[in-house]
Length: 350
Image (cartoon, rainbow, N blue to C red):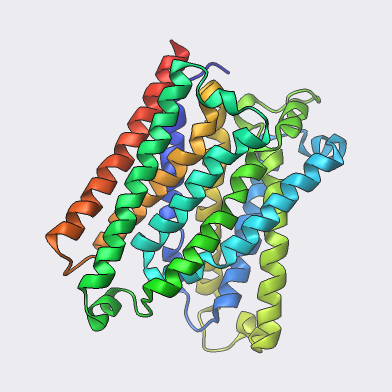
């Protein structure tokens, strides 16, 4: 597949949009406990959607997984499980910080760790600086991180400026300190998704070797199903534990609740969530050797769109000009980081 950086960055940005809005359908779920709608989200987003897509786009997926090295499968699955632990706290992060600030901090940490650590794990640290294209891509990552810091600083200013009642008009359970602790843990653990998705190169090689071969665009789908399986196990077991502990197993058939609607909206949230990583794996081939910047672009886009969504939801209403300036500066830098990422791909192609 010929590199097409503009296409790759566009796909990553669309993935970021999906990551920013996936939580919205949950607001339509009525009468269910958190663990009940999260269970449906996990089944649809971590099992149904990735497997349906893999079977539709990767005709050799079963044989590829059968012939893949056990160590690679275990590594990818373990990374997915680590993400699963972080993902369970993602909802709590949004619960205490709101969509805009919560995703900015969580995705920021996830971006930094998920972009810079995989090349180190692969022993390919030199790839970050060995060409003009790689150096430009690294600059884009740094600009992205600075933008994330500015958004975080805006959140800290908001914490100091607004009275408790005002903050909770937009975020009912707003708690900056508790939310920050959860965001740090969740962001770092969730970055393992990047390790897993970028650690399945041997699986991708088999996908393009075993007949009938999978195309370069979709070669990452067998990797995706393995990583998400690890995440599903953690989410499923925890939600089942809460269902039993809180006696909420009856939610799935409870009279007086919109059963079909709840199943639809919880499943829709899972499908939208999964879309961001589908975009990540299908955008990588278009980036060539600078594919590693995809994670930074994905996370920066998620932060950009989630912050804009937070503004629309009134999460920044009543803040000072200084806070809004920091927020605007962070958003501008996040947009700039995506432009720089695209330019790095252009340099590589040139």
